[in-house]
Image (cartoon, rainbow, N blue to C red; front, side):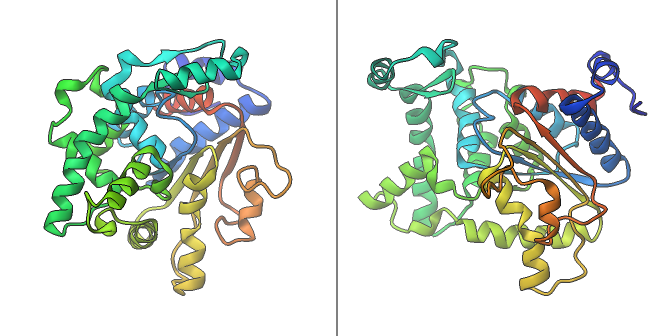
Length: 328
């Protein structure tokens, strides 16, 4: 049984979640809380389309309560939280998405509705609206010779109130706004494959932006992460909570072997906790489906690192773990 002070959700989990992935979920939540109680901090990674899945409904409060201390996310999750913030009323949910024909998909394209599983993001109300605002920031920085990371441009826009009149959801449910208000350390590798990354490349090609390096790169993010991890891990154990796979998880977890093997910083501690929520199967060299013990061979985790894998849908699992950790 957990030693946490539990609310109704936590009590339900504690009583009913006893075996298989349910037990793994509870064990991971208890381990998460223990890691924080013991003085550690938590590094979170967001893959997939968690922002379009509105994970901000629970993640934003986790950030406000100081239970998430740094984030790595895909460029898609970075921008899609803001898309939802300003265009939520124009989104369309398609519960029968499995039944769509190619012709149905073409009809959505012609309406400029970009489908993410059961949800369509409206191009004009979301993507183009944000493009107009962020392009001004890119061009202003470019003209001043200023260089910022992708998330820093968003922090500047959100904290400057430039979108406040456009909000279509309660801003307390935007995880990126909560992160900006905390000035949370953030790392966004591979940003160029996101919608706004594509747009940025287009504006460089057309000459609207003169210096391609106005938005800082993934290599610079890794350098920043290396210094952040070195400094913080000497004071507090850093846990790793991974939602999904891909670059959001692969990029940051590699920082430890890089510090040890490439920079010879042998005294830097390993990650102090590891949990992954994944629906990827362990087969055919799939790194996203690799069991945690494989990471020991790469110098990412240790033999004694608490390790959890929950093979399930993150949109179901993550909010439950967050609720448990927050005592809801």
